[in-house]
Image (tube, rainbow, N blue to C red; front, side, top):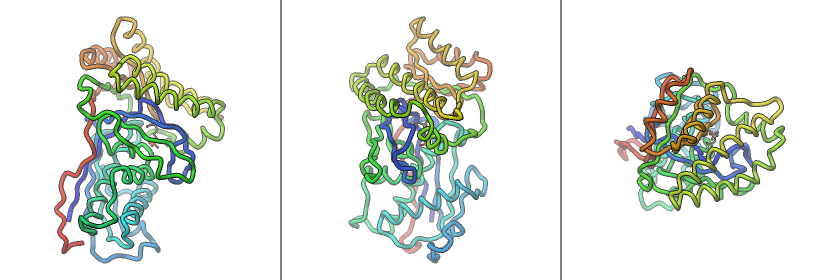
Length: 353
Ligand code: PMV
């Protein structure tokens, strides 16, 4: 039996940074992202054997994770095992088989390009298919996309947004209100065909501090945390208004501000968390210089050093050649709005469940 699903990574224009609940990744601030068509994770589920092990005893020995071709142990595997349990339990199943999970990214993993977002979104869609086949299509336990986005969020908060194509909002919620922190589409994939994001790839290395650790440290020590939470709600409203009006300059401006404030916040932690490298700042200045020449381009950057530039199709060549000339930029990649996460195939047979 094989189920294969694909999900696309996303880049936040209004950034999420900080949680009200660490365990289930409830964001302290609302966020808004753009799903990218060029970076994706393809995840397959294969049943290793049909006997249902006693999962409560040693759940992690039962499953196998092959991540980018490598048999993987440790935190990455623990998270995948936990997610299998989470999605199966949420569908009302109390036993499930040993899975062989293979997960492949077509882009660098854990490097600030949102590989955990596409990975947990793809895994959620594959597991949903498995659970649906087990339950049958008229089961009362089938989940809708909003409920699935809450589950994906528990794997990695930004994964909730990768379930959907186009522009996507992730809601915030209080500590005991997990189901309110769901993702939903704001503008569909084909609503703004000129929209582009250019990524300046500067390293293939994984980042030194995970976003989970960095967020907790920021919340505990950063001087501007309360102000960040306060401003992010206003930034989100500005961005949603700009999206509905297809107002590129307003959207770009508020996105650039949100990204720089997120990094300023992380830098105000003690000790500071600094994801930006020299090349990232050179790219920022180059983008400002382009704007002075009338090129529509705005800077953003996630928890890693890669500069990313929001622009329109008519300016994309100028932006790419400008970024490519900056020492340290290894490659430029152009993204348009990506699609919903989806099933690629399912050769599941009831007899094998
Ligand atoms: O969901 P995580 O743990 O991958 O954190 C994502 C954090 C940022 O990418 C920096 C911002 C965001 O909203 O995606």
